[in-house]
Image 1 (cartoon, rainbow, N blue to C red):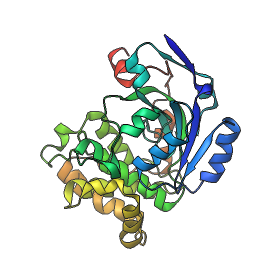
Image 2: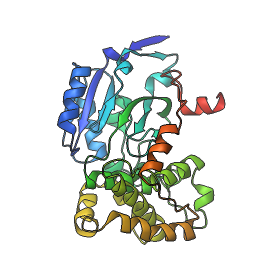
Image 3: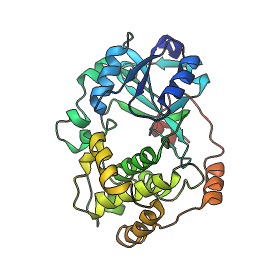
Length: 306
């Protein structure tokens, strides 16, 4: 067995346009004095390649610019029992400040430089559904059970909307493929439908939470019920322009209300907007009994042995 202390791995703080990236960088640097920062690289594939080049260790830890790790994470060890584990990428869960969801979105990850150099995703995709908007369908990319950080994607109206919009798109897909309306309820994974419903409903208790909900509903509507190229969701420049020209001057509550009935009627999604008190209550109790088990435990293993 090969045992690696996380504290012995290079740690890369990957930032782009997050409003609190300077504040979070100070906090990360105080927590992880050996951390290195990569900032402002266009494109998700290119940004990850820049992070890999900044690392001096073959395996490295990656923290997104709107994420704050739990300090205890850096006291953990990774236990590699075989070559498959040594080659894998790990994405641990994060607690989402907007809606309380706890899954891989925005979470701490651990990559190998070899994996990143070889991958072709997002703007560097070969055009396949599985690589156009995600990393996660590579068999070496493992979704992990434990949660070691919190993500704060609501730094501004735009960032909250973009976070919701992107998840509103991606939660509709089946391994990157857009199902037809008739296939939607059968092809989309139950957990993704659960997450999608929460993105559509929860967050009115936090700043710009209304914009996150509006964005999620809008992303779902445009993906499933409009003639729109959903793969543009990976293009941050496109999303910025779309926000400025088509969204920013609108009222988020009006967007939420105008799309709720359509999503309910045509996709059979619940149209429930939780107010501030109900949102707080939901997040306070949602998975309130959560316990981390083992940093090497995958989500799949946890489901097989609850």
